[in-house]
Image 1 (cartoon, one colour):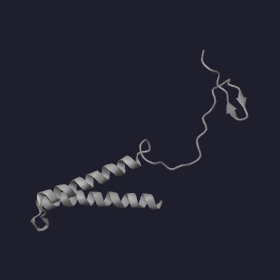
Image 2 (tube, rainbow, N blue to C red; image 1 turned 90 degrees about the vertical axis):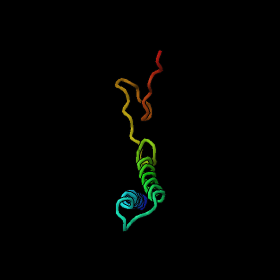
Image 3 (cartoon, one colour; image 1 turned 45 degrees about the vertical axis):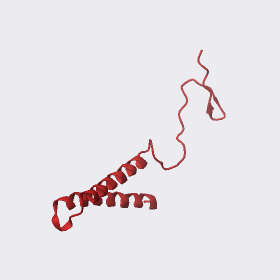
Image 4 (spheres, rainbow, N blue to C red; image 1 turned 135 degrees about the vertical axis):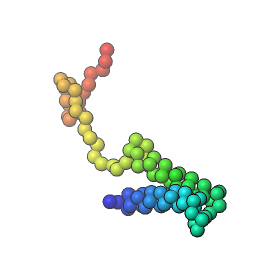
Length: 90
Protein backbone atom coordinates (compact mmCIF):
# COMPACT_ATOMS: atom_id res chain seq x y z
CA UNK A 1 0.00 0.00 0.00
CA UNK A 2 1.23 3.44 -0.86
CA UNK A 3 1.12 6.46 1.40
CA UNK A 4 -1.59 7.92 -0.82
CA UNK A 5 -3.85 4.88 -0.46
CA UNK A 6 -3.37 4.79 3.33
CA UNK A 7 -4.21 8.50 3.54
CA UNK A 8 -7.29 7.92 1.38
CA UNK A 9 -8.52 5.14 3.65
CA UNK A 10 -7.90 7.35 6.70
CA UNK A 11 -9.88 10.23 5.15
CA UNK A 12 -12.76 7.90 4.30
CA UNK A 13 -12.87 6.56 7.86
CA UNK A 14 -12.92 10.11 9.23
CA UNK A 15 -15.67 11.08 6.78
CA UNK A 16 -17.84 8.15 7.83
CA UNK A 17 -17.17 8.92 11.49
CA UNK A 18 -18.22 12.53 10.87
CA UNK A 19 -21.48 11.46 9.24
CA UNK A 20 -22.24 8.98 12.02
CA UNK A 21 -21.40 11.55 14.70
CA UNK A 22 -23.63 14.15 13.04
CA UNK A 23 -26.54 11.70 13.17
CA UNK A 24 -25.81 10.73 16.76
CA UNK A 25 -25.64 14.34 17.94
CA UNK A 26 -29.24 14.84 16.90
CA UNK A 27 -30.51 11.78 18.78
CA UNK A 28 -28.28 11.51 21.87
CA UNK A 29 -28.60 14.43 24.28
CA UNK A 30 -25.15 13.90 25.85
CA UNK A 31 -23.52 14.47 22.43
CA UNK A 32 -25.87 17.23 21.31
CA UNK A 33 -24.63 19.85 18.84
CA UNK A 34 -26.74 22.55 17.28
CA UNK A 35 -28.64 21.60 14.15
CA UNK A 36 -26.42 23.75 11.93
CA UNK A 37 -23.19 22.29 13.35
CA UNK A 38 -24.51 18.76 12.92
CA UNK A 39 -25.60 19.50 9.34
CA UNK A 40 -22.18 20.97 8.49
CA UNK A 41 -20.48 17.89 9.94
CA UNK A 42 -22.71 15.56 7.92
CA UNK A 43 -22.27 17.51 4.68
CA UNK A 44 -18.50 17.70 5.15
CA UNK A 45 -18.32 13.93 5.65
CA UNK A 46 -20.45 13.27 2.58
CA UNK A 47 -18.40 15.72 0.51
CA UNK A 48 -15.14 14.04 1.52
CA UNK A 49 -16.55 10.64 0.58
CA UNK A 50 -17.75 11.99 -2.78
CA UNK A 51 -14.32 13.45 -3.56
CA UNK A 52 -12.58 10.23 -2.52
CA UNK A 53 -14.93 8.23 -4.76
CA UNK A 54 -14.31 10.59 -7.69
CA UNK A 55 -10.54 10.47 -7.30
CA UNK A 56 -10.49 6.68 -6.88
CA UNK A 57 -12.54 6.11 -10.07
CA UNK A 58 -10.07 5.19 -12.85
CA UNK A 59 -12.15 6.98 -15.49
CA UNK A 60 -12.04 10.32 -13.63
CA UNK A 61 -9.24 10.34 -11.10
CA UNK A 62 -5.58 9.58 -11.19
CA UNK A 63 -4.60 6.03 -11.97
CA UNK A 64 -1.41 4.14 -11.39
CA UNK A 65 0.96 4.56 -14.26
CA UNK A 66 2.53 1.52 -15.79
CA UNK A 67 3.64 0.11 -19.08
CA UNK A 68 1.06 0.66 -21.82
CA UNK A 69 -0.80 -2.41 -22.95
CA UNK A 70 -0.02 -3.17 -26.60
CA UNK A 71 -3.02 -3.55 -28.87
CA UNK A 72 -2.93 -6.47 -31.26
CA UNK A 73 -2.83 -5.72 -34.98
CA UNK A 74 -5.72 -6.74 -37.15
CA UNK A 75 -5.20 -10.05 -39.00
CA UNK A 76 -3.53 -9.66 -42.37
CA UNK A 77 -2.17 -6.17 -41.69
CA UNK A 78 1.50 -5.77 -42.58
CA UNK A 79 3.86 -5.13 -39.68
CA UNK A 80 6.74 -2.69 -40.12
CA UNK A 81 9.38 -2.52 -37.37
CA UNK A 82 6.93 -3.75 -34.71
CA UNK A 83 4.15 -1.31 -35.69
CA UNK A 84 1.03 -2.49 -37.47
CA UNK A 85 0.22 -0.55 -40.62
CA UNK A 86 -3.53 -0.29 -41.09
CA UNK A 87 -4.69 0.76 -44.55
CA UNK A 88 -6.84 3.91 -44.77
CA UNK A 89 -10.57 3.31 -45.37
CA UNK A 90 -11.85 4.02 -48.87
